[in-house]
Image (tube, rainbow, N blue to C red; front, side, top):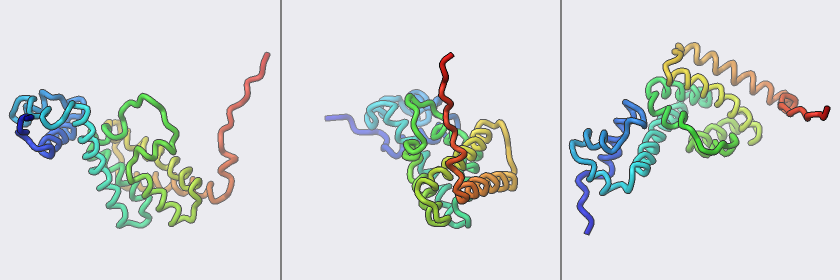
Length: 204
């Protein structure tokens, strides 16, 4: 008969989440977690098979925290712009969680369409907003979202690493200009003309 768990799964995840929130994912070890729980590391592994499984649960908790920021944007108009602002606020207020979700190395590169799945529900919510509010085709919504996401992501990284700090007014102005410029380009029907086509190498 397996030993009875000293701590519940929720208690362990909550404690692990607090460690990561303060110090980052690299600070989450069996030893540091056991110290916070006031126990040996043995009870941890009566609930989780390994630390990788626990890290997955912590990441899921971090994603829920991020999505709570994104959901708050539904109360604003335009909602899509506010999602960008909320994302930057998340990077400002929860830098270690942002780093966990969006600044980890990946073993395999993905296309942006594939990366959308990695964003959880937020990606699909954004695309649906763009299609409905601006009468865009799916491909147009993806193109607009990709451009604004990359721009917003850059600001988030600057904030999460402490490289830059921006006033809320600055953030709103930057996102508005980027969004309006890209939307105008898409509506003009000239988006295809801006695509970069690699030059063919000619033999000497």
